[in-house]
Amino acid sequence: DIHMTQSPSSLSASVGDRVTITCRASQSIDRYLNWYQQKPGKAPKLLIYAASNVQRGVPSRFSGSGSGTDFTLTISSLQPEDFATYSCQQSYTTLYTFGQGTKVEIK
Amino acid sequence: EGQLVESGGGLVQPGKSLRLSCEASGFNFDDYAMHWVRQPPGKGLEWVSRIVWNSESVGYADSVQGRFTISRDNAKSTLYLHMDRLTDADTALYYCAKSNNAYNRGAFDVWGQGTMVIVSS
Image (tube, rainbow over all chains, first blue to last red; front, side, top):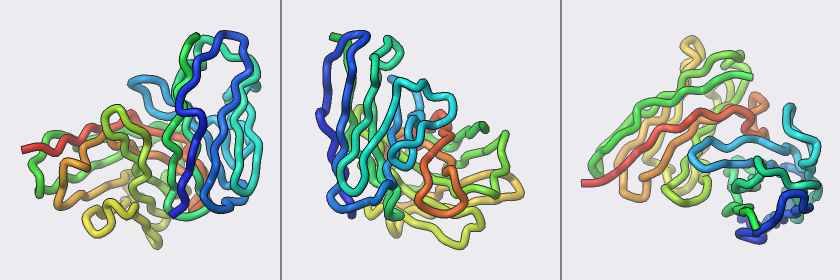
């Protein structure tokens, strides 16, 4: 199975900060990497698919990059509504493993 | 964009069975693969199972292989998850999710609100 590791597990940031979350796969997954945002009590929401494609309706401050084993999610200017947990997911194999999540909190 | 509504969760004793349903609307259900994802209380997301558009291929996480069965009824736009021999490790909020393609390697672009399964004596 492919193991996905996110870092950091949590971070504190202020409104307006640039935030970067990384995700590393235990083996190459090409660009089959997706990012989700989840707020407390809500279902996950797709932000980025295939490493760098922004899902329709997602603000342009969200971007993704990477290929192979190393990927990043960047929020260019953190907004109040962005405080949430972010999870990466590989879809390279048919065992669609998720990372453990990164909680973005208010500093 | 579409909507997914799960049902069938509840309190069940260890070793018993339960069937979850997920009713889809707002999109052509039989054009897309579908998935189940679960989230234990306070923990991260765990992918559980997948089924391609025509049911010809299914897959399961190691943790549920041999105990859970995924199926779909395209005429009813409904996805199912039959769960046997439940253990307390299966306690979680179960989401159904739509893939953005018909087969594999897709992302999950529509999610339901989840249905809670609690396994306890």
